[in-house]
Image 1 (cartoon, rainbow, N blue to C red):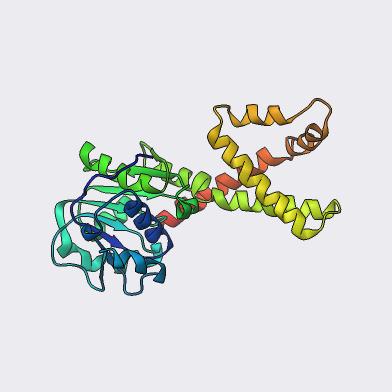
Image 2 (cartoon, helix red, strand yellow; image 1 turned 60 degrees about the vertical axis):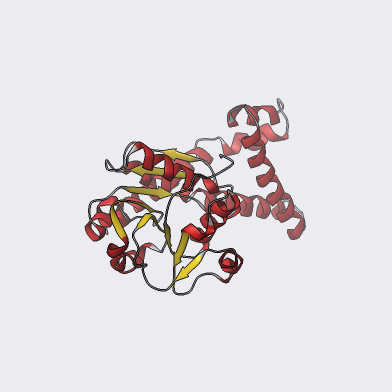
Length: 273
Protein backbone atom coordinates (compact mmCIF):
# COMPACT_ATOMS: atom_id res chain seq x y z
CA UNK A 1 0.00 0.00 0.00
CA UNK A 2 1.47 3.36 -0.98
CA UNK A 3 2.00 6.08 1.59
CA UNK A 4 0.17 8.93 -0.14
CA UNK A 5 -2.72 9.37 -2.50
CA UNK A 6 -2.66 11.56 -5.60
CA UNK A 7 -5.24 14.31 -6.13
CA UNK A 8 -8.26 13.04 -8.07
CA UNK A 9 -10.20 16.23 -8.75
CA UNK A 10 -13.82 16.15 -7.62
CA UNK A 11 -14.79 12.82 -6.04
CA UNK A 12 -18.38 11.82 -5.28
CA UNK A 13 -18.95 8.94 -2.87
CA UNK A 14 -22.43 7.49 -3.31
CA UNK A 15 -23.14 5.79 0.01
CA UNK A 16 -21.81 6.59 3.46
CA UNK A 17 -22.27 3.18 5.07
CA UNK A 18 -19.68 0.74 6.37
CA UNK A 19 -17.74 0.13 3.15
CA UNK A 20 -18.01 3.69 1.83
CA UNK A 21 -16.98 5.01 5.23
CA UNK A 22 -14.01 2.64 5.41
CA UNK A 23 -12.80 3.78 2.01
CA UNK A 24 -13.23 7.43 2.93
CA UNK A 25 -11.28 7.06 6.17
CA UNK A 26 -8.50 5.34 4.25
CA UNK A 27 -8.32 8.23 1.76
CA UNK A 28 -8.17 10.79 4.54
CA UNK A 29 -5.42 8.87 6.34
CA UNK A 30 -3.39 8.91 3.13
CA UNK A 31 -3.77 12.63 2.61
CA UNK A 32 -6.58 13.11 0.10
CA UNK A 33 -7.93 16.66 0.30
CA UNK A 34 -11.22 16.46 2.27
CA UNK A 35 -12.63 19.40 0.32
CA UNK A 36 -12.42 17.35 -2.89
CA UNK A 37 -14.86 14.72 -1.56
CA UNK A 38 -18.65 14.86 -1.44
CA UNK A 39 -20.74 12.13 0.18
CA UNK A 40 -24.16 11.62 -1.36
CA UNK A 41 -26.25 9.86 1.26
CA UNK A 42 -29.44 11.02 3.00
CA UNK A 43 -28.41 9.22 6.20
CA UNK A 44 -24.62 8.82 6.41
CA UNK A 45 -23.12 6.88 9.30
CA UNK A 46 -22.69 9.01 12.45
CA UNK A 47 -19.12 7.70 12.54
CA UNK A 48 -18.36 9.99 9.58
CA UNK A 49 -19.06 13.12 11.64
CA UNK A 50 -15.37 13.83 12.32
CA UNK A 51 -14.66 13.70 8.58
CA UNK A 52 -17.35 16.28 7.88
CA UNK A 53 -15.68 18.44 10.51
CA UNK A 54 -12.45 18.14 8.52
CA UNK A 55 -14.06 19.46 5.33
CA UNK A 56 -15.68 16.50 3.59
CA UNK A 57 -18.95 17.73 2.11
CA UNK A 58 -22.31 16.07 2.62
CA UNK A 59 -25.07 16.28 0.03
CA UNK A 60 -28.62 14.97 -0.01
CA UNK A 61 -28.91 15.44 -3.78
CA UNK A 62 -26.51 14.92 -6.67
CA UNK A 63 -24.17 17.91 -7.10
CA UNK A 64 -24.59 20.11 -10.15
CA UNK A 65 -20.87 20.40 -10.87
CA UNK A 66 -19.31 17.58 -12.92
CA UNK A 67 -17.35 14.96 -10.98
CA UNK A 68 -14.04 13.38 -11.94
CA UNK A 69 -14.53 10.15 -9.97
CA UNK A 70 -17.74 8.59 -8.65
CA UNK A 71 -17.63 5.68 -6.20
CA UNK A 72 -20.80 3.56 -6.14
CA UNK A 73 -20.90 2.16 -2.60
CA UNK A 74 -24.58 1.47 -1.98
CA UNK A 75 -26.29 -1.89 -1.57
CA UNK A 76 -26.84 -3.71 -4.89
CA UNK A 77 -30.61 -3.80 -4.53
CA UNK A 78 -30.87 0.01 -4.40
CA UNK A 79 -28.15 0.81 -6.93
CA UNK A 80 -30.50 1.30 -9.90
CA UNK A 81 -32.56 3.95 -8.12
CA UNK A 82 -29.55 5.54 -6.42
CA UNK A 83 -27.60 6.19 -9.63
CA UNK A 84 -30.52 7.61 -11.61
CA UNK A 85 -29.91 11.23 -10.49
CA UNK A 86 -26.17 11.09 -11.17
CA UNK A 87 -26.15 11.62 -14.95
CA UNK A 88 -26.03 15.41 -14.63
CA UNK A 89 -22.91 15.13 -12.47
CA UNK A 90 -20.99 12.98 -14.97
CA UNK A 91 -18.58 13.95 -17.70
CA UNK A 92 -17.80 11.68 -20.62
CA UNK A 93 -14.50 10.76 -18.95
CA UNK A 94 -15.79 10.46 -15.36
CA UNK A 95 -14.38 7.32 -13.75
CA UNK A 96 -17.05 5.13 -12.15
CA UNK A 97 -15.89 2.66 -9.50
CA UNK A 98 -18.55 0.24 -8.24
CA UNK A 99 -18.22 -1.87 -5.11
CA UNK A 100 -21.84 -3.06 -5.36
CA UNK A 101 -21.69 -6.85 -5.38
CA UNK A 102 -23.34 -8.62 -8.29
CA UNK A 103 -23.94 -5.50 -10.41
CA UNK A 104 -22.16 -5.84 -13.74
CA UNK A 105 -20.49 -3.22 -15.88
CA UNK A 106 -23.38 -3.62 -18.35
CA UNK A 107 -25.88 -2.91 -15.54
CA UNK A 108 -24.08 0.35 -14.75
CA UNK A 109 -23.67 1.37 -18.40
CA UNK A 110 -27.36 0.80 -19.07
CA UNK A 111 -28.17 3.43 -16.45
CA UNK A 112 -25.28 5.87 -16.74
CA UNK A 113 -24.08 5.47 -20.32
CA UNK A 114 -20.88 4.09 -21.77
CA UNK A 115 -18.16 5.42 -19.50
CA UNK A 116 -14.94 4.23 -17.85
CA UNK A 117 -16.15 1.69 -15.29
CA UNK A 118 -14.23 -0.30 -12.70
CA UNK A 119 -16.05 -3.11 -10.94
CA UNK A 120 -14.39 -3.89 -7.62
CA UNK A 121 -14.91 -6.52 -4.92
CA UNK A 122 -13.38 -5.54 -1.58
CA UNK A 123 -13.91 -7.60 1.56
CA UNK A 124 -14.87 -6.73 5.11
CA UNK A 125 -11.33 -6.50 6.57
CA UNK A 126 -11.23 -3.27 4.57
CA UNK A 127 -13.08 -1.83 7.58
CA UNK A 128 -9.76 -1.95 9.47
CA UNK A 129 -7.50 -1.27 6.48
CA UNK A 130 -6.58 -4.96 6.06
CA UNK A 131 -8.76 -5.95 3.14
CA UNK A 132 -7.94 -7.07 -0.37
CA UNK A 133 -9.83 -6.01 -3.50
CA UNK A 134 -10.29 -7.74 -6.83
CA UNK A 135 -10.95 -5.27 -9.67
CA UNK A 136 -11.91 -5.34 -13.34
CA UNK A 137 -11.73 -2.38 -15.73
CA UNK A 138 -13.74 -2.01 -18.92
CA UNK A 139 -12.08 -0.97 -22.18
CA UNK A 140 -12.75 2.76 -21.59
CA UNK A 141 -10.54 2.85 -18.50
CA UNK A 142 -7.25 4.42 -19.59
CA UNK A 143 -3.94 3.57 -17.89
CA UNK A 144 -4.16 6.88 -16.02
CA UNK A 145 -7.69 6.16 -14.78
CA UNK A 146 -6.65 2.64 -13.81
CA UNK A 147 -3.83 4.12 -11.73
CA UNK A 148 -6.34 6.43 -10.05
CA UNK A 149 -8.60 3.48 -9.25
CA UNK A 150 -5.67 1.52 -7.85
CA UNK A 151 -4.70 4.46 -5.67
CA UNK A 152 -8.20 4.83 -4.25
CA UNK A 153 -8.96 1.14 -3.78
CA UNK A 154 -5.59 0.37 -2.19
CA UNK A 155 -6.40 2.67 0.73
CA UNK A 156 -7.99 -0.36 2.39
CA UNK A 157 -5.53 -3.04 1.25
CA UNK A 158 -3.89 -4.56 -1.84
CA UNK A 159 -5.63 -4.48 -5.22
CA UNK A 160 -5.56 -7.42 -7.65
CA UNK A 161 -6.64 -6.64 -11.24
CA UNK A 162 -8.33 -9.45 -13.15
CA UNK A 163 -8.51 -9.70 -16.97
CA UNK A 164 -12.14 -10.81 -17.23
CA UNK A 165 -15.30 -9.55 -15.56
CA UNK A 166 -16.25 -13.20 -15.00
CA UNK A 167 -13.25 -13.40 -12.68
CA UNK A 168 -15.01 -11.02 -10.29
CA UNK A 169 -17.50 -13.80 -9.49
CA UNK A 170 -14.55 -16.06 -8.64
CA UNK A 171 -12.92 -13.32 -6.56
CA UNK A 172 -16.21 -12.88 -4.74
CA UNK A 173 -16.27 -16.58 -3.88
CA UNK A 174 -12.70 -16.59 -2.54
CA UNK A 175 -11.96 -13.25 -0.89
CA UNK A 176 -15.31 -11.46 -0.93
CA UNK A 177 -17.08 -14.21 0.99
CA UNK A 178 -13.85 -15.63 2.41
CA UNK A 179 -13.86 -13.75 5.74
CA UNK A 180 -17.06 -15.63 6.65
CA UNK A 181 -15.25 -18.92 6.06
CA UNK A 182 -12.47 -17.84 8.41
CA UNK A 183 -14.95 -16.70 11.06
CA UNK A 184 -16.67 -20.08 10.77
CA UNK A 185 -13.30 -21.76 11.27
CA UNK A 186 -12.84 -19.83 14.50
CA UNK A 187 -16.36 -20.80 15.62
CA UNK A 188 -15.76 -24.46 14.81
CA UNK A 189 -12.35 -24.49 16.50
CA UNK A 190 -13.82 -22.99 19.66
CA UNK A 191 -16.71 -25.47 19.67
CA UNK A 192 -14.24 -28.32 19.21
CA UNK A 193 -12.28 -26.99 22.17
CA UNK A 194 -15.42 -27.04 24.31
CA UNK A 195 -16.14 -30.60 23.16
CA UNK A 196 -12.60 -31.51 24.22
CA UNK A 197 -13.23 -30.15 27.72
CA UNK A 198 -12.30 -26.43 27.70
CA UNK A 199 -14.48 -23.68 29.15
CA UNK A 200 -16.35 -21.87 26.35
CA UNK A 201 -14.83 -18.41 26.95
CA UNK A 202 -11.31 -19.81 27.04
CA UNK A 203 -11.91 -21.91 23.94
CA UNK A 204 -13.15 -18.86 22.03
CA UNK A 205 -10.20 -16.70 23.10
CA UNK A 206 -7.79 -19.42 22.01
CA UNK A 207 -9.57 -19.82 18.67
CA UNK A 208 -9.78 -16.09 17.91
CA UNK A 209 -6.13 -15.42 18.64
CA UNK A 210 -4.97 -18.57 16.89
CA UNK A 211 -6.80 -17.68 13.66
CA UNK A 212 -5.78 -14.01 13.80
CA UNK A 213 -2.15 -14.79 14.66
CA UNK A 214 -1.82 -17.44 11.96
CA UNK A 215 -3.25 -14.99 9.42
CA UNK A 216 -0.77 -12.31 10.41
CA UNK A 217 2.08 -14.82 10.22
CA UNK A 218 1.07 -15.70 6.65
CA UNK A 219 1.15 -12.03 5.68
CA UNK A 220 4.55 -11.37 7.26
CA UNK A 221 6.27 -14.60 6.21
CA UNK A 222 7.89 -15.25 2.84
CA UNK A 223 6.96 -18.93 3.15
CA UNK A 224 3.95 -20.39 1.40
CA UNK A 225 1.04 -21.52 3.62
CA UNK A 226 1.91 -25.14 2.88
CA UNK A 227 5.42 -24.61 4.25
CA UNK A 228 4.09 -22.81 7.32
CA UNK A 229 1.81 -25.79 7.89
CA UNK A 230 4.73 -28.18 7.62
CA UNK A 231 6.72 -26.04 10.07
CA UNK A 232 4.06 -26.67 12.73
CA UNK A 233 3.73 -30.38 11.99
CA UNK A 234 6.09 -32.71 13.87
CA UNK A 235 6.26 -36.33 12.71
CA UNK A 236 3.78 -38.46 14.64
CA UNK A 237 2.81 -35.44 16.76
CA UNK A 238 -0.49 -33.87 17.72
CA UNK A 239 -0.74 -31.62 14.64
CA UNK A 240 -0.10 -34.52 12.29
CA UNK A 241 -2.91 -36.46 13.99
CA UNK A 242 -5.34 -33.58 13.46
CA UNK A 243 -4.26 -32.97 9.87
CA UNK A 244 -4.83 -36.63 9.10
CA UNK A 245 -8.52 -35.84 9.58
CA UNK A 246 -8.61 -32.37 7.99
CA UNK A 247 -6.65 -33.48 4.92
CA UNK A 248 -8.55 -36.74 4.41
CA UNK A 249 -10.80 -37.63 1.49
CA UNK A 250 -13.76 -35.94 3.19
CA UNK A 251 -11.75 -33.21 4.89
CA UNK A 252 -11.32 -29.50 4.47
CA UNK A 253 -10.11 -29.28 0.85
CA UNK A 254 -13.06 -30.98 -0.87
CA UNK A 255 -15.47 -29.05 1.37
CA UNK A 256 -13.78 -25.73 0.57
CA UNK A 257 -13.78 -26.50 -3.15
CA UNK A 258 -17.53 -27.15 -3.03
CA UNK A 259 -18.13 -24.05 -0.91
CA UNK A 260 -16.23 -21.72 -3.25
CA UNK A 261 -17.96 -23.21 -6.29
CA UNK A 262 -21.35 -22.65 -4.64
CA UNK A 263 -20.48 -19.04 -3.86
CA UNK A 264 -19.21 -18.47 -7.41
CA UNK A 265 -22.35 -19.95 -8.92
CA UNK A 266 -24.56 -17.79 -6.71
CA UNK A 267 -22.56 -14.69 -7.66
CA UNK A 268 -23.18 -15.52 -11.33
CA UNK A 269 -26.92 -15.91 -10.65
CA UNK A 270 -27.06 -12.56 -8.83
CA UNK A 271 -25.22 -10.74 -11.61
CA UNK A 272 -27.83 -11.95 -14.10
CA UNK A 273 -30.76 -11.01 -11.88
